[in-house]
Length: 296
Image (cartoon, rainbow, N blue to C red; front, side, top):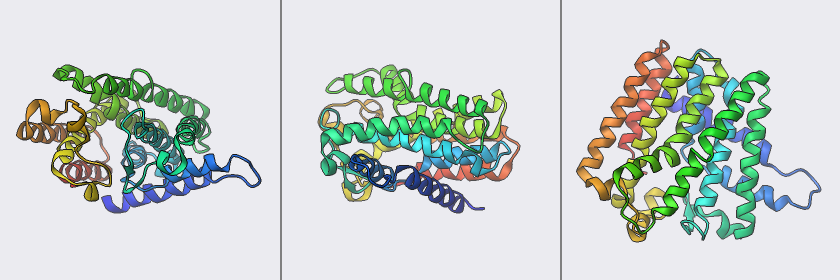
């Protein structure tokens, strides 16, 4: 299976499960909440995190379908972060994945509730994966809580808020990105390991891969925010500069930022040499190169 085929399969299967989980039941009075959740969760996007969940499962000897509920869980958690990140109290964005943001369509109050509900549904999906044991599902819930919580994505969001209109030092920016962006990518890789019943050494390699790829992904986003346009990216550009946020581009300069992205991408690829299953490892290496070269 090629990378394109594997990513399409993960995206299609995860999308089908999300559609099933987020379609409102008949005869309820709060269907608008489901509609708001469904709108953002099924809005498209690269579906990189669900792919990482299923591919790391295959990398560790499991079947991709074992990990689908975990893939849906991490995508719901990720979507929650996007809805809340776009709110007027945070980034106040009007465009996401080429579509109006959730609060623009459904109103701010419903958007907040949609994000909250997606967070709850993420844990529900992880806890109720029918293809894994209760012990595996408990590990998955713990991973979502750790990487998505106070010392993970949520903590990174808080550092991001505190860093607006302030020139923060490199160590603060590193901590911000490791938490806000890389943590959920590591979580995706770890969830795939959990679904496959992988050993602790493999789990640690998954964490390391996610950290390298996650930081490289964010630096590339910083670069595109300077060099691309809203039509290509499907979201607003130049927001970081206008709000006075420190980025790797503002701290290091464009050339050094690009060099660091390449360096971290190579480190991520090297981690994959420690796995014995060559086909998924090669697909993941190809993904690293594609993300490095992407224009959106």
